[in-house]
Every structure is written in structure tokens, then in C-alpha cells.
Image (cartoon, rainbow over all chains, first blue to last red; front, side):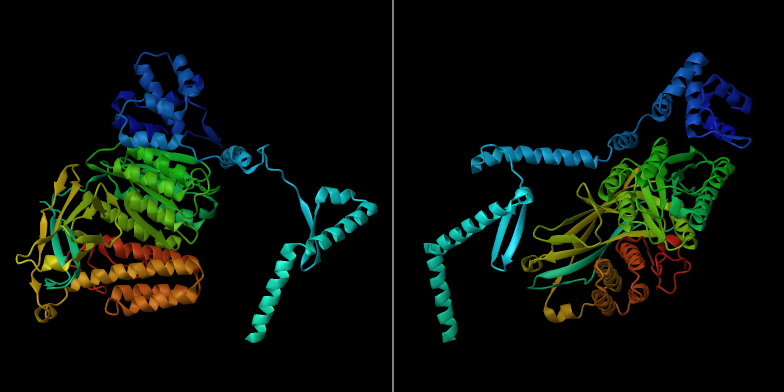
Amino acid sequence: MVSALSEVSKSESWSGAQPNVRLIRHYTQLGVLDRPERRGKEAYYGYRQIVQYLAARWLLKDGWMLIKIAEVTTTRSTPELLALLPGTPNNAAQELIQRFRTARPPDPIAARQTQVLEQRARLQQVLPSLGNTGGVVQRRERVQLDLTDWCQVLIDTDHLQTISPEEATRLGDALAAAITEASRSPHRKNAAKRRARLSKKGKKK
Amino acid sequence: MNPDLILLPRRSALLAGHRNTLDVLVRIQAPAAPDRDHVRPSLNLAIVIDRSGSMRGKPLQEALRCAGFMIDGLGPNDRASIIVYDNTVEVLVPSTLVVDRQIFHRALRQVRGGGSTALHDGWLAGAEQVSAHLSPSTISRVLLLSDGQANKGLTDSAAIAQQCAALAEAGVSTSTYGLGRSFNEDLMGEMARLGGGNSYYGQSAEDLMDPFREEFDLLSAMYARQVSLSLTPAAGVTLEVLNGYRRVGGAWRLPDLAFEGEAWALARLMIPAEIGDRPESPVLLLASASMIDMDGEPIETNTARLILPSLPAPAFGAVTEDELVRRRAQELEAARYQEQARQAALNGQWDRVQALIIEARSKSADNEWIHESLKVLEGYARTRRTRAFSKEAYYSSRKMRSRLTSQLEQSWSDQEDEPTFLRRKREQGRTQ
């Protein structure tokens, strides 16, 4: 860190006296700098501590007491500390970078929630015009019983769990009556005629 | 000395009485070589290295060696910073003048691998370091190296590339280095294309140094950047630039120009019959280019005019095609075939890949560079190596579309004396 700071001090004259190990230790003890990472006997200072040091030197030059400086350097984020430092005035590139940093990627859960709420609002508007005065889509699960390839029976799933044998028999009677009735309807006769016509055409060919 | 702009038509005449389609090579030429007192422009670089788990071992060692190589090429007038990223980003050396290289080398020696790939955060941290020291007379660039997919933070490729474009306009360009088989070439390529830098890749750690050397040579020989080409066709003439350069404010943005180099575009003109039949030959195309020199000053080329006579069929038949224009058109066509073959390979349509390679070869039988490049692709296709095929096809087509060329281009097999950044490689991802 000392060598990195020496380099910065050469190019940034305002940062004052050449840093040395004693000064860095002193600042660390006063809480101006975050404590370094320890690896065995060695202490590693990183980018944040370099920025803290530079901010401290700048504030010191401005007449601040070290104890007050420590409150600033330890409570503010690194970009906030950087903003304290003099240097190249904020340029277009720096403004863009700040904007990119603050524009976080969209939260997929929040986006999904918004989508669901929007869809619900749309349904509440449209359904009454289709005769659903409640404006709510009722969801019902059905079990489909394929009696043959051409005949299926749909039964409410919940009701199927509780249906009694007597009820099933009555349903069978009702089903038989309904089928007999439907087979005599005009729709049924028209369908029979269509089938006959198609059959004749097939024979001519 | 200002750069020259030359217009070179594929044929130097129009066929009278007919609608003509004419390819015109637009050549923007930098001065031949810097004089002896030429001082390389100052560089302001951020070297951003992926240290995610997949980089552990040789790839990371080699990446760090390449970073060390770049640092060794810099001097006290240059600035550099070193950033490493995995889940998090760490600025190892903040932007500083390269007075003592040992600061950088010591920092590089500390790097260890681990974690996932917060590529966008790493790039942004590099851009932040560079942006604090922008100067018109300095090349400010982020060099981003990764072997993986962006999987943490912002991962949307289009959004990241758009940010690169915005920063390039604000003075911070981006070059990218993909390593291995797993990186996202679409993302890395677009970041560099829109970011105003160069994109490279290495198949293995051993192949990384070559592109770093190429970029360093290019930066050292830089003559001008932000090269904008303006083309104005005659009324009624329609125009298409075949290279796929992006448009910025009505002009086409060409690659940065180095000494001895030539940035080029191939414009296809569709000329209606009535224009060719006028008694006086009209100006078919006006072309000029502007750019920023290394002192940050704007410079302009001459304005070139294309005027061609209209000839009757027998005389027109005797006009031969220009060899250079024909070759560049071939290369652009080969680039299109390579892009199509890449898509087919990604869809697993290997028969189509083979058919496209054969067709591309038949259309450029006399172009040794294309021929050799197709041979490489054919090898990957034969062994069904989708990722290797995709990456090589991507970078090869990009190179053929938008490379900086030599002004006096030698044959493919005779280019040893040319600067590294002007050479045509047989295989983009391999050291040659």
C-alpha cells in the first residue's frame, strides 16, 4: 500500500507528505483506515483503504481533525469518498458509469408479480362485457372419462371424490335419457343426412 | 499530414442503357509511417481479468502473464489499473502512472482463482478507473478478459454492449479477450464492436499472448480513432455498405486507424439506367471521412468523387475488374457464408454447414486466405465440434468484414514483414 500511495502522491501533489508504514499504522489505529486483512504476519490493504487515505489527506488539508475524519472515512462508501477527492472534473464517461451502476438488473420475481396484476386488471375489465358479471375467472378441474373413442364424460374432480353409488346410477339414467333425446334432435338428423351423402359420393368414385 | 481517401470502383465504367450494380472500395489511408521522433500516444488502460473458478490453473496464469506483458510495454507517461473479478470485483491497483512496474507485478502475483463471473461489474470497474483520467491525447481503453458466461449482476448481452457503445462515445473504448470454449462470443464480440475496440480469442492459454501483442502493437502505432465515413450517392442512386459497420449520426464508424494502415468499406451502388445515360457523366458518389488524431484534434480526409463513363456493351466488356476490389468483395461474401454456417452449426445442421463451406470455397478459389480459413472450419465441422466451430467462424467472419489492412497488401503467404495487427491469420484463435 505504501508503494501504491507513494505513486499516487507523486501525481496528486495535494495528498501531502510521502506516506510511510508508521503513518498508515497510526491512521489505522485512529480508525481513519479500515483494518487490513491479515495473512500470517503480513497486513494487506486494498483499494478502499487507499481511497480512505486520500480522502483523509484531503480533509486534513482542509483543516479537519483526524477524529472527525475517521467518522467520515469509515461511514461513507468508497464512491462517496472518491467524490470528495479533487481531480478530473466529472466527465460524461463517469456520469454514464454512475448511471449504469444505479440501473440494477430487473428483479424477475417483481416483474412476474407486476405481469400477473396487470393481467388480472385486464380480465376484470373484459369479463363483464362477455356476461361474467363477477369479473373473476372460476377455475375448475375436471376428470375426463373416455367411455369410447367418440364418447367422453367430464366430471368435476372434487365431486368425483365424494360421489355415491346411488348418485352414479342416477347420473347413468340421466345420461341415457339425455343421449336418447339428443339423438332425436334436428342436429342429429342433419348429421345423418350428411353422412349418407358422403357415403353415396364415395361409391360413385 | 492528413489521411487520404481513395475511391476504387470494381469496374471503371458503367454499361450504357442498363441498370448497373457497382462495388466501390473506399480506402482511408493513414500516413505511411511515423517519423523518427514520433512518440507513441499515452495509454490509459484498465486490465480486467476474470478469476472465476474455471480460470484456475494455467488459464489464469497465462492471463496474468499477458497482463504483465502489457504492463512491461507501458512507460511513465502511461496509466494502468488492474482489476480482477469473480462474484465480486477487486481493484488490485487503482489507475496510476506506470513509474514502478513492480507495483503491478506484485499485485498480479497475489491473484487466486474462484467464484462465478460478474463480468459486467468487472468491466464497469475497469471503465471507472479509466474514466477518471480521460484526456483527448490519450487512448483510454478497458481490456476485458474472460473464459466464461456473464452469470452474475447484469447479464443481458444487448444491454451490456449498449453500455459499451455509450462509453465509447464518451471516450472509453473496450477490447475483449475470450479464452477457451465456454465464453460467450456474441457478448464479447459485440462489447468490442460497439465499444470501439478489438475482439480477440485464444483457444488455449498458450494462444492468449498473440492477441495481447497484436493489440499492444496496434495501440503503439495508433494514428487516429473514431473514424467516421460519410457517403453521399447521387440522387436516384441507392447505396449499401457491405461490411456491417455501425452507423453513428448518419456516418459509418470504421476501425481505428494505425500508421501504415488502411480502414476500408465496400459500398454497393445501384445505379438506374437513366443516370448512366446522361450526356455528361454525373458524380455517382461523394466520400469523405473525419477522425480524431492522437492529440485529440479533429482531422478530415479529402473529399473524393466517383465519376465513371458509360460505355456500350462491347467496350464495357473489355473493361477488366479491379483485383483488389474483387478480393475484398470475396472476403465479405466469405464472411457471410461463415456467419450462415455458424448458425447452421449451432442448430446442429452439419450437412448445411458442409454445403455452405463448399459454396464459399467455390466462390473464392483464388483467394488463399479464405481457402485456408475454410479448411480450418471444415476440420471442426468434420469432428462436429460445435463450440470451436462457432467461435472460429464468428471471429474469422468479423476479421474479414472489418480488419485494418496494409496499404500495399502482400499475398497471404508473404506477410511476415507486416505489423502484427495487419496480418491475416489462418486461424483466429491460434498462435501462428
